[in-house]
Length: 227
Ligand SMILES: [Zn+2]
Ligand SMILES: [Zn+2]
Image (cartoon, rainbow, N blue to C red; front, side, top):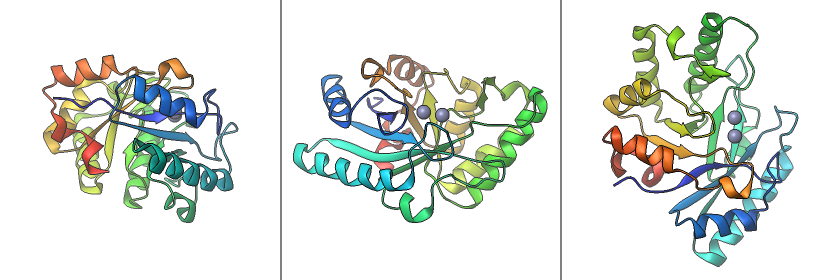
């Protein structure tokens, strides 16, 4: 069985339209086991500044204690070209979940983008600074066709060593199933995220669930019980 959860939701803390209360309500009504609020970090113009994440952390903790529902505070941190996250460690460690992704690349051609993308994420992996890689291998489109097989295998191995999970993201329909198969083979845990910016998108994970079932993934392959 693949558990139903959503570890990628934006709120009014960054560029989403929902309040924390609405996230909790949607998560419950959709029958999720867990939901994470992962607003953008300060590296994006729409992102929240560090003090807001401290506020988010305490608000979410209060809601969890009051409601007994697994709602987590988090960030979708931006990984810069040098592999550095846009939220400092002292704030990250106050959050329940640190996710990270690449949002800006310098070059225009896909082959160079794929190289830049991998360089940034591999550098970030060395710092062990995040738990889930969001919309993996995606930048305007899938970069997978421009990544040599051997390099993909090395990259997946590094994810496994770093204990970083890979998100199955329904907003971008990323990553490709070939990469997910490689992750499953090497014991990289998978996560489920909608990248919801509006209430009705929260927990709409049917695409992920059917894909994961088709790939033969089970609960033990998912990151939920390992957070
Ligand atoms: Zn993103
Ligand atoms: Zn997002």
